[in-house]
Image 1: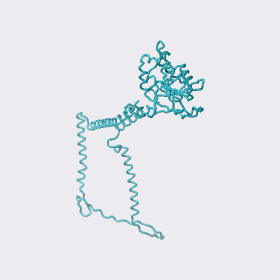
Image 2: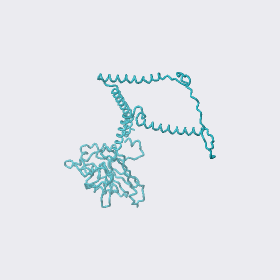
Image 3: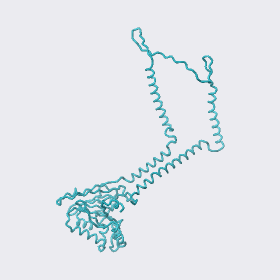
Image 4: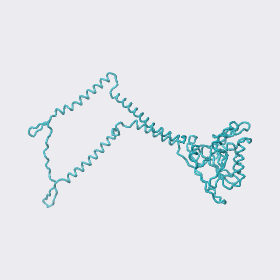
Length: 396
C-alpha cells in the first residue's frame, strides 16, 4: 500500500488468495476477514480494462463454498452479470485457485517440481471448503461457459503450469504462474509480463496480438547463496595462508624472481659488451695478399690505486689486515654456538624449545589476524546485505 502511495499514476489491481481471506469454511467463523480485506484493498470481484481487453478478477476461494453462503452468492452473481452483457471485448480471467484439470496433467517445460493433483477438504455438514488445490470441475466448466475468456491466469500452485482447456467455443489456455519468492518452495522465482494491445476496430478478431504474455525468470536463489559461500571460503583461506611478508617470502616466488633477475642481468651484460665493442678504436692492417682487416687496438689499463688507509705498501707488495676480517668472520660462529647450546640446555631442562614457542606464537598471531579481518569484512558487508534484503519493508 505504501508503494501505491508513492506511485499514484500507476494503477495497481489486487487479487485475493487463500492466505489473504482463507477458504469459504473460514468465512463462516471469521467474517471480519472479508471486511478487513475489502477495506484495505477494495472489492474481491471486479473488472477493469486495458486497451481492448477486459480483465475479470474473481474471488475463487468462495466459488466452491456453500450455496447459502453470502460470499459465494455474491461472487456468482457478479460472474452472471458479466456474462449477460453485450460486451464484445476479449476477456482475461484472473483467479487465484487454478481451474480443474485431470490428475497428472503435464504442466509444460517450465515446471521444476512434480505435478500436484486435485485435493479437496470440506467442512462437516457442507459448510464450505477447508482446502483445495484446484476448483471443482463443475465450477471450472461454468466459469468458462459464462465468461468465455481468451486467457486464464492463476496462481496458488507456486510453480509454473500451462494447460489448455477444451470448451464448446474453442480452446482456452491457462497459465498458472510460479511464485516470485524462492522462500515459497520454488527455487526459480518468476513473474509474467502481459501486454494488452490498443483498441482496434470492433470487427477485429486478432486476439493473439491483443494479449501477449512473456514469462520472466529471476536468478536461482540457491546459486547466489552458493556463490556467497564460495567467496567466504576463499576469503578465509586467503587470510589463513597469505604470507605475512607478501608473496616475495614464498620459495617459488623467490626462485622465479631470481631467475628473472639473472635473465635481465645476462641481457644487459650482453648489451654492454656490444656497446663497448662499438666504442673501441680499430686500425687497418693489410696481409701479404693485400686484404685489409680491422683490428681493435689494445687499451692500456691504468694501474689500480689502493685507497684503503689500513693497507701498508712496501715496494710493489701490498699487505692487508686480514686478521681483522678473520676475527669478524669468527664472531657469528661463536654466537651460533652459544645459541645452540642455550637451546640444548632448555631441551635438557624439559621446557619447550624456542622454535616451538615461535611456531605457537605465529599460529596465534595468524589466527588473531584472520578473526580481525573477518570481523571487519562482516561489519562492512552485513549491514549492506540486510539493507538490500529488507528494503521493501522500509516505510517510505
